Image (cartoon, rainbow, N blue to C red; front, side, top):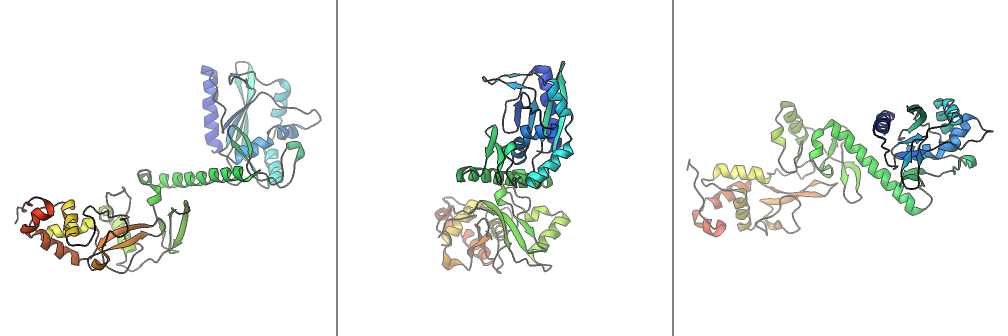
Length: 381
C-alpha cells in the first residue's frame, strides 16, 4: 500500500480507538509495540534502527504496514492503550526520516518510504510508524549483527510476524507465490481502472495486442503466467486489425463483439489461416435470409449434424473435443486456433455451407426426421 493509503487507514484506526476503544487485530499489515528497547549508549537513529530495521524490511517487502507504538498487546489478545514514556517520546521526536532512508540505502542499496507521526488519546501519547510497500525486494548487502539482519536474507510479513523467505526452499516458494499473486493483482488493478468492463471478463480470456512490435500478450495457461509471443498482423486497409480500429472509431462496436463471455472487443481470427470464414452466428443469419422456414440455432446445429459435418448435434463452438468436426468436410467446416497462448480453438464455416444448409432446411420432407416437428414458414414465404 502507498503512504497515502496507509495514512488514511491510520486515521480511521485512531478515530475508532478514541471513539469506541476498538483495536484492530494484529495481522500482516498491522503490528503493536508497547515501547522501544533503548540502549543508552546509542544515538536516537541507532535505537530506532535496532527496534524497527527488520520490521521496515519485512513490511516493505510485503504490502506495506502500520506499527502502533505505545500499545500493549496482552497474552489473551486484548490491548491496552498505555502510551509512551518521556524517554521513548524524546527519542522518536529526534528521528529524521531522511536519515532513516539513507541508512537503508546502505543496508539494501534501496531507500524506503516511511512516515512517523505522533497522536494522542486523552493525556497519553503514541506514535504511528507507516512503512510503504516497495516495488523492489529489499535484500541486505551485508550482515548487520546488531540489527539481527543477515546478508542476502529476504524478510517479509506473514502470519502477523516477520519471516525469513529464503531460509529454505519451502519458505522461498511461498514468498515467490505471494509476489506472483501481487503482480497479477497489480496488473488487473491497472487494467480495470483503464477498462472497467474487464471486471466482467475472465482475465485469462483477455489479449493485448501491440501492433507496433507485432506482439500479443495474454495468460499462459500452461505456466500460469502472463506472457507474450510474436504475431503476424495484416496491416493492409482490409486487414482485420484496421477493420477493428475503423469500427471502434466509427462507434460500430456491435460489429466486432458478441455476447459470449461479455468481451469488450472480441477479435476472431487474429491468429488464423488465410481462408475466409464465417462464425456460427453469422452463418445462422445468412441461412435465415435464404430459407423460407423459421428455425433456431439448435435446428441449425441438427442440420449440420445431419449433413455429417460434425459427430454431435449439440457440438461446442469454442474448444470442441477432438474429433467433433469431421476432417473430410473441411470444404464447409473446420477448427482454427483463436489464441496460441491460451490454446483456445473455435469452429468456423465457409460460405459454401450457407447454400447447403438452406437447401436442407427448406426440404420440408426432412423436418420430422431432423427436428421432430414441422417448421413454420416465414410470413414472406
